[in-house]
Image: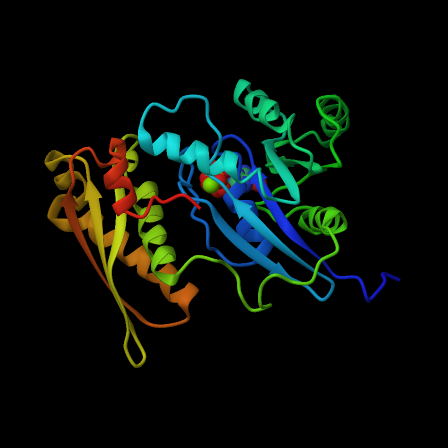
Length: 300
Ligand code: GDP
Ligand code: MG
């Protein structure tokens, strides 16, 4: 029997190279979609927390932009800083990799982890891709030699395989503390922020390879009417020539993005949503520190 008088609570950083499934894992672990995901690297730009509250523990997950090797533009440097600073003030680290695929970028992340004092759990995500489950054991053995991991857990965030197991090892490693947040709170971010991120996710998923990195979203209006949320979002682009791509033929692309974003917002906010999207140009915003902070890219 667990000691009922012991309550555990702490911060858990989800760390790893881009695209390994950190945000998918966080959403599944808290049972709500608050961190956006896509098959494009560097979808997550900001640090965002997600809270899971149980009778005997509270895990405060910190989802981070992936740590990547090349950081040429200010927006990429901002993302690397957000990921690395998350390491400073957490109680526990979950290092997420793709099972069966170890890359130089994983090696780079591991080097960052060598300096941390906190326990590190290795999460081998996407095991649904591994058809031969016998291959897992030698893989686990090989990876356990890379660091003194507190635990190694194979899982699939997408298919919800082994999530109970990873929660168990996380909870066991949390320090004894009273809860930090109310048990009905799921994130530290505002509804405005979450709304902007939902629009950005739909754009990332709908647009081709290059453009998603040249845009950001700002919520211009977020008004709670009687039984309706009235939301206006501005999509900022780098160049005038990108406008027609985002709007699409006869406005089709923007319409589709708006419909998908509205559906997600209605599910998250449990309310009817009226959503309007506008497209504007702010030249060079992604490499301009001042423009970045005016668009909400502030540290912390
Ligand atoms: P992040 O950059 O590490 O936050 O990765 P995301 O959470 O955005 O996920 C990147 C891509 O991997 C998305 O297309 C996810 O749907 C996909 N993904 C995440 N977890 C799994 C998994 O367990 N199995 C499979 N097959 N795909 C996954
Ligand atoms: Mg992410």
